[in-house]
Length: 203
Image (cartoon, rainbow, N blue to C red; front, side, top):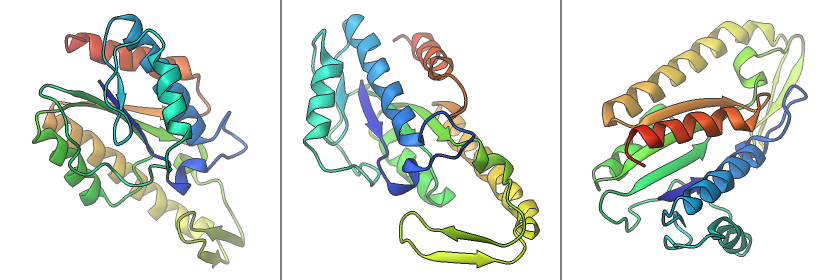
């Protein structure tokens, strides 16, 4: 089983409504899954970083390797996967819809079975802004000022709904599981759902 956590700047976002930043929650979920999988005798690896290892303390070893590596801000391209591999992705998937679909399909064509966990800050789904606001792109630091933020709310929420629907369509098409997890919820909720999905697929 391969694990991968998106470490792009957008994953560092945390609103006042959230318990933790998206990346922190993603890492907690990834290492918790590594622990569960290792206990059940699975080989666990970090995609783009380590080979799958069979060890009772696999989670600890993966954490050590991750600390010594460069942040993984790009979706893994053409990794060397073994046959019938399972991959668990943790990301906010804020790339364009078409790119997300292409990235997932490229791994599907290698025979991988995927489990996608989209990590979302609650503010990203309600757009609670009004009046004059300044927004900053986490990737480029470019600033965007709007005089009446409420004027953007309807189109923003429509875009979020479209993107969520597109992610579900992409994963359903590939026969992969999809979980949308909010950072104001308990990590255990996503962990149970993910473990159930993998158990249903023979893991």
